[in-house]
Length: 128
Image (cartoon, rainbow, N blue to C red; front, top):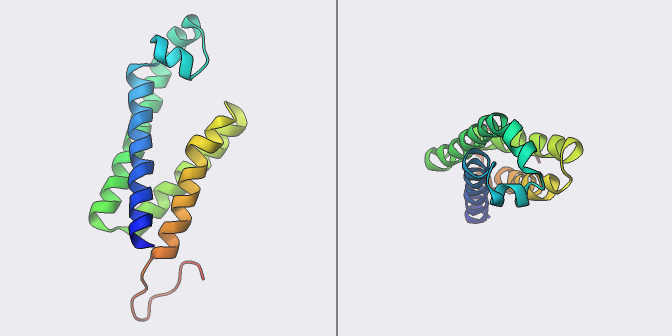
């Protein structure tokens, strides 16, 4: 269970580095136009916003990797919760597929991370 939680955390981090690359470097490119279903005009007018969004996705990915390296359970849980919330919001307001591409993998990973947590003697349970 612990290995699967770590592997999934790594995959979610990798997804967010992929989002960084798409949003920062391929937004106003034919690849970005196709992936995000937008015209050249829309891409050009929102390019700076997408770059900012991409940078934040990179921070989320980096934070998850830091949580993996240090074993910081609280950091991983916090960032995964943020990703789930952002994915739900994006799915409801921007594009439904965000629910499946961003929110669902992060939610499954969040459950795995919480389930795999080892309790130390006297430590309270996060969830039963």
